[in-house]
Amino acid sequence: MGTDALRQRRLEVIREHMDTEVTKDFDATLATFKSGTEGRPHYEIMATGQVFDGDAEVMDYYRTTRTAFPDQRHDNVRYHVADDSVIVEFDLLGTNLGEFYGLPPTGKAFRVPVAAVFFFDDDRIVNERIYFDSASLVAQIGRTELLTGGAS
Image (cartoon, rainbow, N blue to C red; front, side):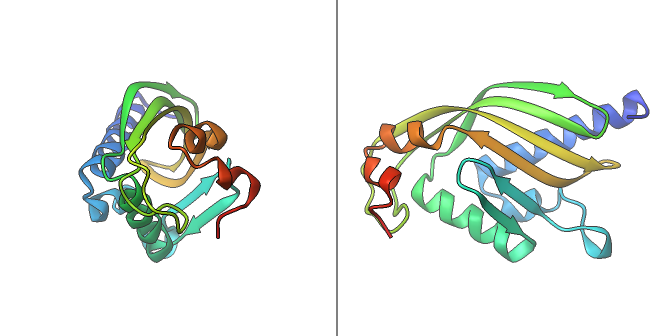
């Protein structure tokens, strides 16, 4: 990976990324990604197969998820550094207080374990790949009909 300084800078970038997701300073979150002609924000949600590519799609993802779960946050965060990536394990928490996949809010909370792999080019994120149990999340918020494709 290079130097300890690069490793430290990558950890700082991830902390800024995750902190600004919680505070909903999404412009700052987007700024943690490589941008311009050399890159753009890119998310892969492995549990659902969704991919969000570029500023507009990623910003829409932030707004949609924070409408459904305005108190979304992280707990028990642990970092694992590799050569070209940092793996972050954490518990994702939130309460369904807004529309979720076209369904009204249930007011129920969730807590699911997540593994997020942040891929880097130098000290900027080029991709965030997220792994979690989506069935557990929808069951905890009382929306098991989403497991069978019952919602639009």
